[in-house]
Image 1 (spheres, rainbow, N blue to C red):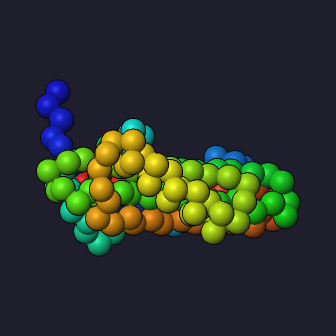
Image 2 (image 1 turned 180 degrees about the vertical axis):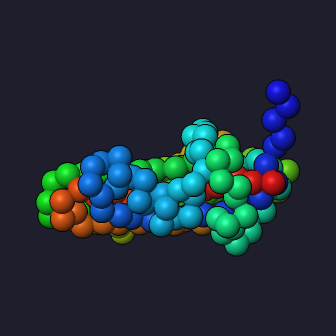
Image 3 (image 1 turned 90 degrees about the vertical axis):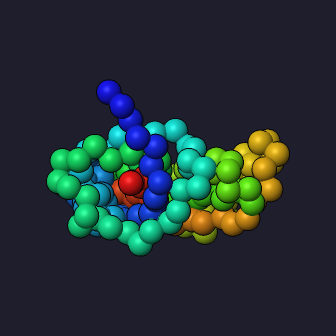
Length: 157
């Protein structure tokens, strides 16, 4: 099988309640626009030169295998706040790969978003790659019965 390197990406997020933990996760995927695809979870590297596009969930064919770096969390504890976030470090040098980090926790959205941004900063520092830009997206949910939060970076061509 030949796997083509993606050239585009977009950020998505969603949260939902549900009948079960899996139903809540499915609802969060639907709200983010990727619920009718087969997510292929990937590690956290953005290919060199990959450019951001507007989210295109309707352009994703139903059932397509879609590479995504994502964070998710589910809970069935009423009153609990859950949050998920992803961040991308775009290097100054466009010939180098960027870095995607994912984080989720039983915490407020700002806490999770701040943590994932720091993770990108440290990861790019480890790679000795100056950062041109950091992008992030997050979601949060206050659980009533069962809930899920999801955030992801979709890679596409």
